[in-house]
Image 1 (cartoon, helix red, strand yellow):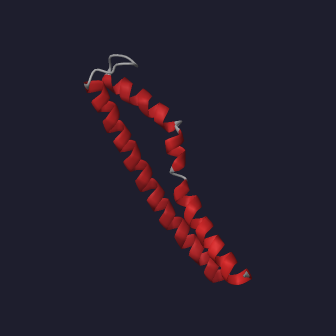
Image 2: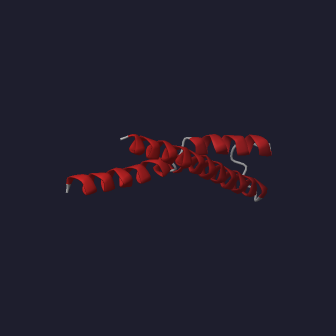
Image 3: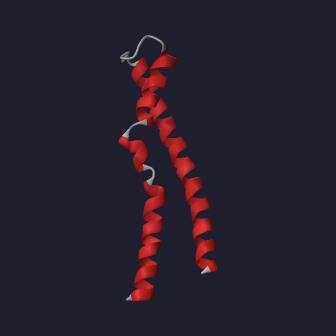
Length: 90
């Protein structure tokens, strides 16, 4: 049982590193797209570029795409739990 707890602890630390990395990468990509959109003439939020990017990132923070990154935690843990169940109870 202690080995399983240790496995999940190491897994959660690793998945947290992956989650933070993917989250920062995704936010950077979104910021780049917002800057390019502003430079291309899309000035929906106002004339200031920083304000445009900030409001666009606020919209991104509430988006479904941002929430999908949480699957980094859910999928591996679900797969491991399923494997443990199948091996022990089938």
